[in-house]
Length: 239
Image (cartoon, rainbow, N blue to C red; front, side, top):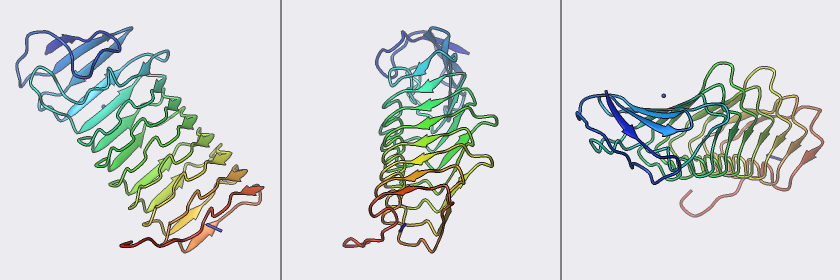
């Protein structure tokens, strides 16, 4: 058991591309096409990606670095978008905080894969998020806590796998989640307790494997399937 200089950024082109006059200390705002805009704060610490509900934030738009002054943001805000695409922030090692707007219904596969300094994920009030894709937050080794919005119905394979210091996983009241995928939280060594929402029907293979500090598990009666080694504890050299 177990978030003024205007840069024009053509849609879907390479990260950080753009043109326009710039003052290094001014806010930078880029029009990414199709109603999408990218706005960098004056101090360069925060970038806001704004889109529409029919847009997907892609890796070509999701640049943390302002090409006009080469400042790299550590905080990102995604608002208005319908989804965050596959690999959008993959290996974004400078990213420490992300706020995901209420309109986002899907986080694609590998979206934040390898964002090793990501320590805070905030879902805006009224989140409509439905799914968190395969390895979306894989190896988020600085993440200590996550609150899954009530609207989420599924967490994909290895979504938070390798988040070794993740110590607090909560599900918003009224959670609609029905499945927790294989390896979803595997390697969460900091986790001491977990309460699975009443809506969950299946817990995948090795979903919490390696959560070696886990001492309390609450599994609701609605669960009909628990995969192999779902809560098994294993030790590896140096662990």
